[in-house]
Length: 459
Image (cartoon, rainbow, N blue to C red; front, side, top):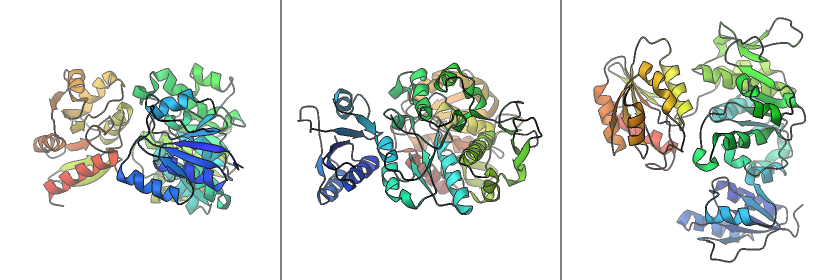
């Protein structure tokens, strides 16, 4: 399919590595560029060289640009970087690794995007569908890069793909069997520039669906003018965290997950509340979206129900690390934006009579607004212990509604929060920010919290 074509891959991370190997498998002459030169990249470059793939490390704009018929760009490359500008100035087509992998995927794709909840939703789908006997792989922004998973797709019934806004920046043919947008709340505005641009990037997932009903959207999102325009006014499949009287999928007053019928007949309970183990209304909505995707794939969504109870919520997501002397320590390091932080507080404090959370927050704020959080913080948070590059900004924003203290070190913030906790309190790491100012990623940040908890609690 690519015999004789010159494919230039930008970035030698996991996505770029998978794209290079896939292009070579189909006969392309492949060159990979990366601006870094770390030992790990050099090891990868050597492995590609033995496969007949050329690699140029420590590339910058002063160096020659390899000729190309097609450029595949990795999602982690910032548009303002040398590699990002190379892509912007290219005369040939430029596509994302996700788009490239899609073109070689031999099975139908169920795609999930959103500001929050997409990893949980795709992993939940993979878990339940495998338990139900289907051959399923989870790929994209979690699990295997799609370019790697595509090589195994002939043996699959379905591919469940987590899709980020970065991956959607350069897609032009991507056509999932069905696609869900769980939510769109402020995130990654440091890259996209505005909320409108970020939302429009998410909507690119819907542009080639065969049927508008294959778009699975939260009811409030489906009503937005930009979404209506993207679907040309056609009706999507909607879900809602309560019974709004209209959504196709909804949570009943008793907590059951239900499917409404267009003919007006009584709604069907697909998943009874007793079968749901994941905490929080946001996770109920994630399950609704998963059920709707399964239905649009032509399967009975009820096949999910028996397996929901065995699904383990991933690490760093409202993870109770320890309870000691009546104090609960919760790791929610995956909360990298304000909406995720709000979900954590509302889930942990549902039904509480007053503030009980000692909150560790802060990091890289990605140019999003935290101003609307004041009422929730006032209701649930006893004190905020702030770290990272956003700490002074957050202290200024939140200081009128909650006691805020700033710290240079993560350990100092943790120690101070733990020292103030009394029985019944929760020491919560839910940063609302990215981690790269102090840690390699949210997982490393979460592990640092775990280590501090275990050291303090002797567990």
